[in-house]
Length: 309
Length: 271
Image 1 (tube, one colour):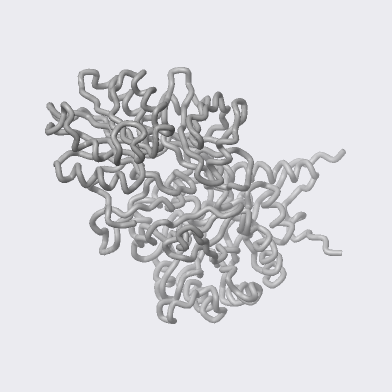
Image 2 (tube, one colour; image 1 turned 90 degrees about the vertical axis):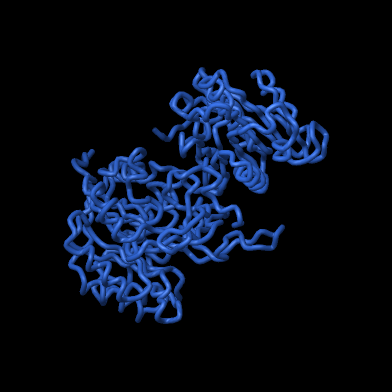
């Protein structure tokens, strides 16, 4: 019997090296510190923090959450403390975490994204940027950047110009063809794409005939969306050469491994953190155990190994 | 400090048609929790219902057990009500800010006002207040829809040495009407300054908060909101605060800023 000496879980996204493929999904992990008493953050592949805008955002009126079958809808409204407070109050603590810190950024205009990238460039302790393009472009009548390949490309290009940090663009699934979106951002300087963001949905209270969310619509996440996410990750991985980061309903190591088989370099764990704050660390251990048990010496052997015939 | 625990159900009691009390073995929480704090409780291993449910701590006992009290309302509570002694559940806690227990100014009496399942945290609160401030008068005012939902809880308070005033919506036990009405009744402490601790349905807390404000009394309310994480990551449990912050609406978060708030900090006009 051949003994696997060492399992190589390392992943590279642009120039950022992750010790393992397990990242946290933005908006589900606060600014990292909230989870420090439950998870050893040093053990994670990367910590992706709550999306940051130029100015603080108050977010949407409540109710902001509703549980749905095997999932949840949220309409938080991108509440965040803004870049200034992030740099002052959150980043110093995050510098003590061994895992790379990925800062998720969001804006109302192309210029805002570029300004955020510019301010984060050359800031010590940031491993990469993740660009949330699922925001409305206020200069284009509120059409979501991520719904239009030209606008997605424009944001990517502007952010690329503003920073030399590794750049991940987080794609919206609310599009006709995810491959076109992935290609558009890959062609304009993205080092990786992460997908999927939440699926737009809604829930109705039949008794009151009112929407269950004050915002009417919200983003669906959780195990309910995993099949859609897997399909889109598989399509995107076939369409671009840059690393694909799979997100969507990952609750356990087996879920994460399915995304890797579909072609993902890494994964982001989101809603699972709410259900089980230790989920990310358990998934790291579970991936190692799977590779050991199946005598697979590196993640690369598993990546994109989907058998179609 | 909050932790995540896989715990065993020690006992399940049914107190009414849809009212249940679970006793869970959680010594880390039982020994550290303060009145008004909460736990996220989830029947382990399932994807549906997905999320835990927040419950204020009903009792923390010397034997290392904690209790939660709830009414079956939706899928989550239905699932929890189906648990039996010996089953396991996932628990995160203790979470949030509890009630402010600092001694009140001389001459101010303490008054605990609970409606429906909002009575749950008042057990732990009453016990702790009595222990910390043995000389003080502690009034209890409890309300529910009917006698079936209230009599056992009121009796348990009597066994603990309290003398609760009770109100029911249908008049089947005590005063017929809403529990905040009891604040205006002609009782021995009427006319004297009170500090009010309140937990119950939002309209009932709004009436109580309003009455206290008019009287110039300190009023602490414990809010119930939908939560996904309970640990300030999802930001789903926003409640509207008074005033503005940076020109925008000021939202507070029940899991971190609460669930107990000074009633004056909240905007009671919002839904």
